[in-house]
Every structure is written in C-alpha cells, then in structure tokens.
Amino acid sequence: MSWTNTMKSFRFVIKHPITGKNWSFTDHLSIADKSVSWYITDRMKKMMSWQDTGKVVRISQDVSGLGRRFKMVYSESKGWVGADLTKVNPYV
Image 1 (cartoon, rainbow, N blue to C red):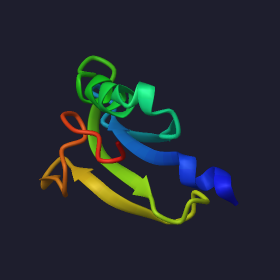
Image 2 (image 1 turned 135 degrees about the horizontal axis):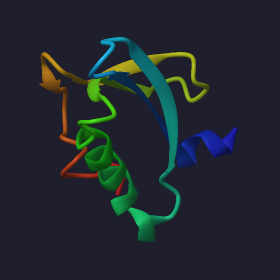
Image 3 (image 1 turned 180 degrees about the vertical axis):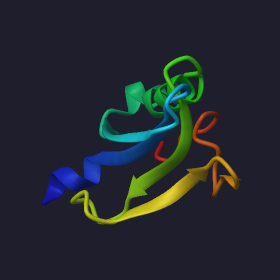
C-alpha cells in the first residue's frame, strides 16, 4: 500500500480545561508534497496553543501505517521524545 508512505497520522489527547475529561482525535498529515512541508509544524503549533478549548496531554504517531499502533512523541509530563515537531519537520 503505497499511500501509507505519504501520510503521517498523529493522535492527539486533549484535556478539557473545565470538566477535566480527556478526548482524542487523529489527524492525517500528507508528507508527499514538499512545498507544504510547513504543514506539520503549523498543525503542531496550533494544537499546542489551544488553551481555552483544551490542553494537549499526549501526541502519538502512527507507526503501523494503519492506525492500529501508535508511539508517543509528546507527553505533558516528559515533553518531546525526539525532535520538537513545533519547530522542525523531520519528514522534509
């Protein structure tokens, strides 16, 4: 399946500031078009700047390519594991 090589999926776990409940969603980011290499860092900055909607607790990257296995790349308590995706796009 060649389409999995051009997409990177990230699962975001967000904590609601008032209720304290966690919710998550998966964002699929294309890395095929090198002219939009800023997109991953832009999305990460946007997620980290959410304060009134929620706070990022964890970001995980899909390692299987099918959305079944995720590896943590950011944790609220540990910080970034590896490159800081708000500053650098490692896929360029």
